[in-house]
Length: 245
Image 1 (tube, rainbow, N blue to C red):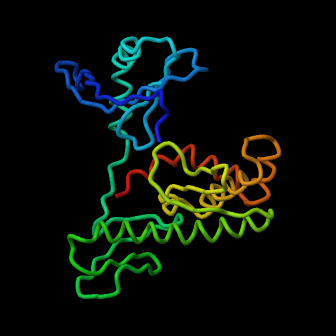
Image 2: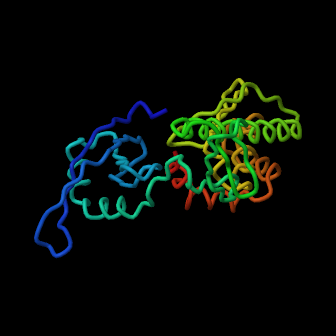
């Protein structure tokens, strides 16, 4: 869910085409976020890689932020063009599952639903239903993987997990409520095994420490083997999983 201080809009950005003779224009999704601790306007691509996020101080006029984006249009459009293409759920697509590449195959004659073999995911039934069936399959895999790890880790620290839900947020991988309910991005199934393990450990640790204190990080590190490696992967590669589907 977006912060209350966030607004969405479309901004048209222009830049000179190679050769410097003609201008090209593109409509770009823009999210404006006001942050109480921001001292200047900052700019970055969103997690999906299909738009930009502008963070601005509380009192900065929106027109100033939009002008900032327009002044940086060359950088923005260049970054958007460099984002890898989206990968639809379709036969022939290569989908990572726990860090392992799987080729999607379609078998119209089979009646087994969807199943995973080493290096392949096979989807049966009519072709028009493949995207939905593949998406549902990945979400089931994510729920099974995450739920098992969450309950095992919670037992290790004498905590009880409440309800576990899977969603598709843009801005976070997981969350923990004060009631012990955990929520995760189903797209974690598209990340390496050690990344899933870290995110689950992070949220389970919040069952005992609903903060980010030194004690919390010590607890998290005790629940997963490669915390720093996973955090680094999420910083560098996390946005890529939003390309799929």
